[in-house]
Image (cartoon, rainbow, N blue to C red; front, side, top):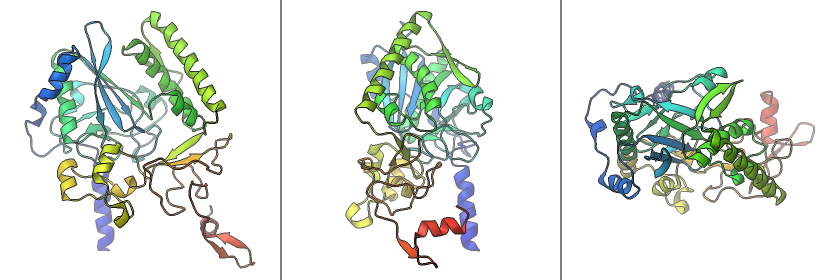
Length: 387
């Protein structure tokens, strides 16, 4: 009974983990200045703290970028921050409680900034936006915040969110009414698109790429609207021809990679990921603990609470897909930083059948059926519970 109560309490805390609202003690941390090193970096790039900002996030690479707009109206990259934690899988957020961090185009306003966040500092992305609402998606309190814990948010560590918060604060103080936050599953490269060409989300991701392409070509913020339940992007008409040309070149590059044999894959995470630098900082002695991540007192002091470190330990798994989009025998290895896990673990994530083949996996153990026919343990359980 006590165990159940403890588990329920833990669930309540987890559900509140990304809300970041209503810090009990007010502080002045939201007034911290932009660090001198970042001020110096801006100076070398011809930027000012007063210039408008734009942000982009990438789940697979676990990175968040901050861009600054110059006097010529074009954005230039200021800095790339490693992401300490995001949760869920690649793909959009669908419903409240699905642990998914959102993907799409959002606008962060001064009212979305939370100086008294329970997670050091935070700002609300504004999910659900018009696109999400058009698809009936639900959820709230989707944040970028400090610490290293995520329940559908992007966690940056306290130090990083303090710097980003200061950059946004100064831009707002200088007149920016809201900054665009572009959230992607991965960098929209030809290689990523070729690898994920059979993923169920590929049509949505190609729609996101249209906005990414405009920004990449023009270095200007695309105008975002929703038409026929799709993102629609507008802007300088003189740029559109260059954007179309980029899209044709990217499609040709994707086709070339497919012709060379790039395998179609689906990445399956136990529960999100984090930048490799944080994984290395948390990694224990693989020879002594099976490669698990150690969240000791020192790590907590540096990073705060780390949500579900056991889900981070193995990293994502590559499931190779057949032409019909379903898993087939995998021939490539898992990602370089992924550690091996027992067969059958983390297979039924986002529609991947429990029996889907995984690289390096041994055959499933079998038991003898009553009729003398060998059946896998998983088959027995699937029979008992209706598949």
